[in-house]
Every structure is written in structure tokens, then in C-alpha cells.
Length: 519
Image (cartoon, rainbow, N blue to C red):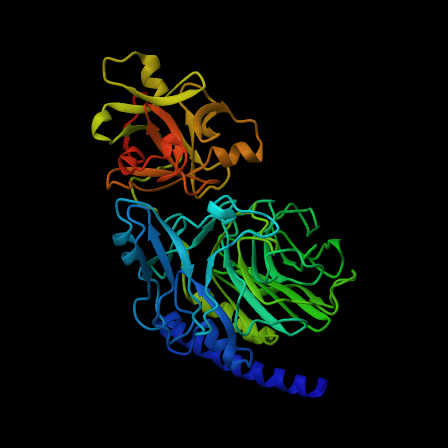
């Protein structure tokens, strides 16, 4: 059996090497190789003898012939849904469909379709060992506009997971169970993470509960140290095998698993009887590195494995949902892929040309000073201002006092929690920042904590009402900076709080970026 396995792997390696040569030749010829038929990730896995049994992406087709829907969005204004497909077979997401459908309101991602034809789609995660914050104990759904990217210049959106957000499928088709071999990769934002449990993608329990050691096999990304860690301060790519985040053969610390924080990160976990591996690399350039390749962990319950075959994204197997991260694409395979197959997939990912996208609206250049003017018809002479620690909208004009003008002026800083987003420092109170606490806005001095950094970070997109910019909370991605009864909040588009009211919400969360009253 071992000899047969060796022969099969050599044959698969030869096939995937041939595909890699096609990719390189296409790149040298200047063609759009990521769009070429039979050269997408799942075609490469099939050629290597380890076909995809789940394929999820909100950014592009993962088969060269795939022409179906990638994901579905639902808008808040009328709860209508729309499938978002690709621009031609094997192509990129048709983001213009989302932009048009969601104009003037907010949208969430309701379904991430499975491109394999096995219907292993991901939908809103139900309650389990832990409840989510949505109705009935379900997890939240991701804000559809929160993770803009481009692929070779084509606009697309990822899945932005803030704490409480999660997707799951507990009734799958063809996913590995027991000790069966499997592989998986995921493309993440390597700068978006936290220490919460657990930002996972992969194989989990079918009842949304902790069923014991070895009942999961997923890719984990973050800087949690509670169950295991690698070198440095993190984040790390590890394997969540239930009741343990493993970075190597040992429980706890393994020095060979490095800190990795590429803006676009390819992360791989694969496993077979008493053998598993972690690999990762920069999804924008270069190849993959192997961080572990060896026996199952030297702890009870992980050999043999007892995988159950559900699929999760953004949560732990028991629905633990305090994690954060961003997902763009990922697959799960039948069988243990060769390194050569994965190397060909990595070349394909690099050729896809992932790059940071823009949410639209006015540029918020770091170091600049701005004022933020309300665009609601009632209040177009009001600006977002602070008075002491309180934040509200207040009228400002050329006759206003120097203090009033300065209170309405903000220095744009790189996001304290993530530099792709922005933080706003008071012009006349250095070291103090706009932040939310219990969903209300305040001006507080930066205490250096992780919580403060997250509360004081906001991601910009084009104004929901078509004017200016809207600013979304980094750690509550369904909430936007809003003025309501002149007070500043982070508000959702509908909810249990009075300031979540849908009336005037598109206007109240849209801010004109104006020249500063105090330069």
C-alpha cells in the first residue's frame, strides 16, 4: 500500500508540475492565466488526484468552467436577495451587481455557494455550545461591503468576520469523516485577526458542539495563545483539532511555526492517518513554506482522528464566535494533496492578482485634517464634534469660536487596530480619539489596549446615500457612525435600539468630508 501511495503521489506531482508550467507560460505571454480554462485551483487539485469536495469564494471562480453564483446578498431596505455571479466562465466576481443592488442601503452575505456541485454551501451558523448574537442564538452575517479587494484590477468583496459572525453547514456531501485524508486551503487577510476563539475554516462537528479531541480539522488563523502558539507574537497559521490549536507535534508552543501577517495569506492544513502538515505563503508573490510535516500531535485523542464532516467559517466547532478575520476563497479536498499540487495552486493564486481595494468615497489620507459634515437634509450645517468626552453633531460656521471649530476638526490616522482602516484623533486634544463604547461615540485618550484600538478604528466606504463617506465600526461591522437626535452612535440598519431606526439611516450614516475648520 505504501508503495502504491508513493507511485500515485509521483504521478500526481508530474501532473501538477505540468499545470504549473502552463501557468508560468501564460504569465510570460501576458495572458490572464487566472481566467484560463482548466487552470483554476479545483482543476489543479483534480489533476493531482485529490478533487475538491467544497469550494467557496466571494471573489472568483475556482474552476475554469464555473459560471454559477458565488454568493448571495440580502439588503436591509426590503430583505430582497440577489445572487452575485462571475463575469464569464472561470472569471471574477461581478461586483457591479452587488454595488447596484445594495445602493442606498446595507447588505449582508447570506449564502456562500459551493462550486463543486455537492451543495456544500455555507449559511448563517446556528447556535451550539455557544449562542450567537442574532435572533434565535444564530451568528451574525457579514457586511457585504466591508472587505473590498481587486483581482488583476477587477473589483470584488471578501467575507469580513467581526466577533459574533459565522457561517456553517452541518449536513455536507463528500467531506472527510473519521480518519479519512483531506486537504484544505484558505486565502485570508493576514492583517485582520484577534485572539478570540476561533477564526477557522474547515472540517468540524455536525451538531455545533465540542464532541472531543480529534473531532475537527480546520485551518486556524489568529494570535490566540490559549491552546497553542508559534514563534513571535503571532498571528499564526495553526490547526484547530478541537480542544487544541496545534502548531506542530507538541501541545502548546512549537518554535517552527512562525508569525505570518502577509496582507493576503495562503494558509494550508492537510491530514491523513497519523500524518498532517501546515503550509503557508504570501498570496501576492512567491511560493509556500512548510511549517510542520509529521505525525499527529503527541496528545491523547488525535490519532486516529474522529472528524465529523461539517464545514465552518469564522467560528470554532462549538460555535465559539469571539474571533475576527477576513476570508476570500478556500477549498476542501478528498484525499491528501501533494506539495506539488499545492505549489501549483499557490502559483494560480498569485496570478489572480489580489490587491487592496477601496471602499469608495473621498480619500482619507493619513496625516490630513478633516471635518465631517452631516448630509441629512435637516442638518447640513452640523458637523461631528466633541465637547469634553461627548460626541455629537453641532452647527459650525465662519463666525463660530475657535474652540467650536477645533472641536469639529479631526486628524486622520492609520487605523489603530488595522492600518487599512482609519482612526480619528482630536485636533485640539492630542492623544484622544473618536471611539465607541456601548454603541455611543466618545472622545477618550488612547489607553493602548486592544479593545480601545478596535473601538477607535473605522473602515471607510462610499456614502450609503451617495454622498461623501460612511464609516463602519471595525469590531462591529454591521454598525456605522450615525447621528441620531444630534448624538453620535455606531448604529445598525434596524435593530432594538432607538438609534438603529431605519428611517433616515442612509442619510444619517453618510458624511461629507470637508476642509477642516481648524487646519
